[in-house]
Amino acid sequence: MAADRGTWGTRTGFILAAAGSAVGLGNIWGFPTQVGQGGGAAFVLVYLLCVLLICFPILVGELSIGRHAQQSPVGSFALIRPGTRWWLVGALGVMTGAGILSFYSVIAGWTVAYVWFALTGQLAGDQQAIGNFFAEFTANASASISLTLLFLGVTAAVLLGGVRAGIERVTKALMPALVALLLLLAGRAATLPGAAEGLTYYLKPDLSRLLDPSLYSSALGQAFFSLSLGMGCMVTYGSYLGKREGIASAAAWVVLLDTSVALLAGFIIFPSGFSIPGFDPSSSGPGLIFTVLPRLFSTLPGGQLFGAAFFLLLTMAALTSTISLLEVPVSHFVDSCGWNRRRAVLFVTLAVLMLSIPSALATGAVPLFSNLPGINLDFLTLMSTVWNDFALPVGGLLTAIFVGRVWGIDGVLEELLAHHAWFPAPGLWAFLIRWICPLGILAIIVPAVLSIFS
Image 1 (cartoon, rainbow, N blue to C red):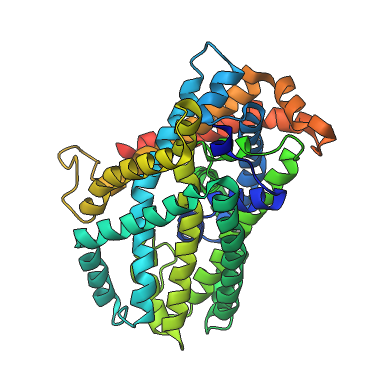
Image 2: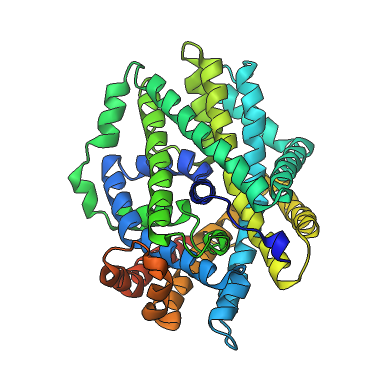
């Protein structure tokens, strides 16, 4: 079992893998979407505060749980507090990782196809034509399922290589390439007509927006989801971390890389968007990525290459996330059931594929629950709502309570300060994890529940 479990080969490999787990489609389209809906730079300001005051403390806590126990999420909570039901928090993380991967892999598959569509000039025409193309493409069930299978297959192949030869090797190659491609696209976007207006929108805050309470909950939600908190990923990755590696410094690097990618995405979207008439910065979801931006690329010199590069970027970002999402349930079966890695990877991949089929089939289908007031969801949207809007914050809330009040600050600090590791202001961290983090996460959960019936 120990050989199947594995460890990180280098500190850099762990940082890039953990950052890759956090970096995903949410950074590239989710963050710019939230910035647009939040009114621009005011959202960016609040987002950065949320990352610093709430997400960083919880990330440190999750990595500490995993490294202390050297187990998957279920085993980690059970080992620290044996004979209690806190292992259920780990079980929630395992289910959440698989649940998110079931619909995330569908969207990730679309990005692969759109690299080809952009490169071959199929994303041409007006906004209506591109929108119709997207609707027809996603209505093709066999294509969606095949692309999902392809993406899950590539992800499984990486995991079969183990921690060092698989996850670490691939993410060490993908993450620098992803950042380099982001910088290239951001540099190109800055040269477009209208880029200055987009940069002003992105960087000069309208302070009156700070009076809107919804701005804070949406910024906190985006920061929380972006860093892969509450789904067992960071507990799992922390379990492969050596005892001599400093958790706080590694967590700081992960937060820095993840936030930098999100910010760089904004430097692509807004200068590019404002370069064409009628761009709506509040456009959201798949519509922004698969219908609005292709129209933008078609208006640019060299737009086919620009668009193909952008969708290649999305594919790379999605892969670094699907790797970590699949590893969460895989590590559970390796640790808790004694399976070898190959058996665990194949079983979980097949199970996730079966779970993803309804999401692949349901895009654009008749909404579920249409007879209930205020509820109008297709299956893919339903899965996203259940896991993103509820399971993640609940998992994060329970983790903050476990770290701050069940395991206890003294126990966590002993793990964090082992071998004289760097960890500044432990008193401030303790205050944040015990008080600010739980209250902040509740600010996500309550509006999410209320919004369903509004």
